[in-house]
Image: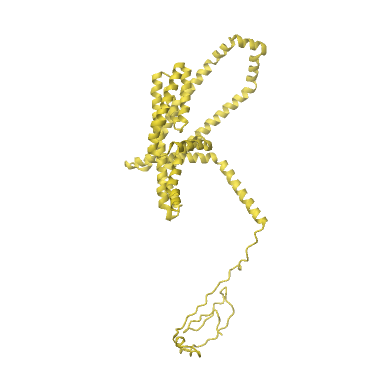
Length: 412
């Protein structure tokens, strides 16, 4: 009988498998000559059997695994399930701790990416005018840094000057306190000045030094964060198209075109929002500057820059700037403070019901209710940064719901 592993084709002599084959077995095949004449049909077979063609049969070799066949799966005991669950919880907690440790760096990266998305339309506009992208990025970056430096220059000198004036006039204030009869009587009865001197010479010296060192640390940290955000923003703007194309490649090819269209629309809304917010802030700053010049309040340029910066914060920023300017106005005179309050109340009504809706309706198309809710949630989650990004985020969510979620629900 021929070897079962040998070929059974007619017209060929059966052969043997190589001896070094992993599944070869000892098999002896005797050479035989096949008769070319067809075999006689079996008794009882009809004409169909006589006309049946020869059928070629091939034997498929099944290789044995090198390390043997796997056995049945292990029984899922409660011990193994509990161990895997505990390991998963441990890994999740480790990842949470890692995110907490690098949260400040991730926040800087997020701010830089947001600014790069917002400034990219300006870069695209310059490239359409024939400027290379590298020079366009440099021009936009230099312009943004000049605006930032202008704001810092406008705010720091008044603060330094007023601090120096306070230090120079501090002895005069102390003399006025000593001339007060009521304070002198309290000092004679309770030795208040002596106790204040003891506190100042003992504990407050250390606290003052600590406060100075803490102030230096805060200033250094702020400078480091600002420089980091500027550098990352420039890198993101320079590699914006490559990063966007790389992100789209992570999506399956069947959905890549739709995701690209939706993603480009979301990015354009972010850029439009930032441009609209800057326009509203500039209008607020210019209006405040003209009003403060007419009223004759000190440091009008610095206060106008402060109003413009705080006005970038949606919903609550304009109120913060108005409060600061009104306090300065009341420090100047009662009439000036009242005038500041009246001006900012009227201006905020004009901004809230005329300027802001007109600009943002064209930019991101977000309803007032959605904008208020998104800003409140953003402030609760990420503070000022959350308030800044709340409106473009809610605009992106509305776009996804309108173009993806609702059509799927309607198709069911």
